Amino acid sequence: MELNNSKKKINNKNSTVKFKHKCVENIFDNLDKFNRSCDKLMIKYIKPIFYKRAYTLWWIYLFIFSLIFPLLKGACFCIGSVMCFGWNLCVFFDYYLFDKPYDLMYRALPTYNKKLLHIVDVIVHIGLYILCYFSLTEKIKLSDVFVAWIYSKIWSYVQSDGNSFYYSAHECEIYNCKTSKIFICSHSIEFVILLIHALITQIY
Image 1 (cartoon, rainbow, N blue to C red):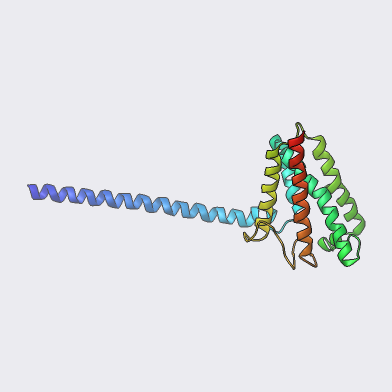
Image 2 (tube, rainbow, N blue to C red):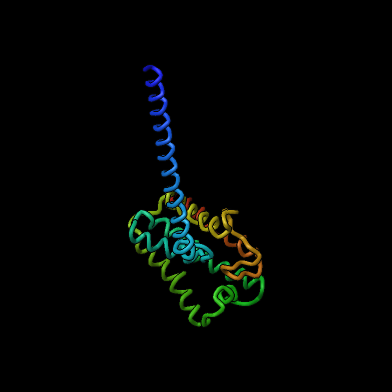
């Protein structure tokens, strides 16, 4: 009797262990399926929106998000400052290097009409910045500057395939730059403008 009881206990334990293993296997299988579906979603829908996309587009995305989440308006304005002043200074720097006015913009979008590009340039880099300013509901805070800086680093990290927080490329597919010096210029301008914003938040 005792032997039978002990055998039954052993069998019960084995069946319990097998059941647990089966449950764990099912959980991992489901997680694996979920990960694969997420990967497909990322590759098919999310990646084309954010990967190999200009910083201006990311700013437009943030502006749209700021309309839904007002807490992002301060950060959106800070990035707008970087875009408005930084972009134009980079255009002038490119002109200084290659002696061709607005060639940086023409190279970035070579298939578009030049007059149309100038109109879009004014609307996006100046018009949207003014709109960001008037949409502000409160003063810029230091946290807004920090969020703007983090957002900028995420852009660099994504565009560089996770290799750097300061995106730079000799043959840039986004802007068709002739030299990586333009990125030294853009990152330097970004640092200075965000630093000015940070100082202003402490003074006023």
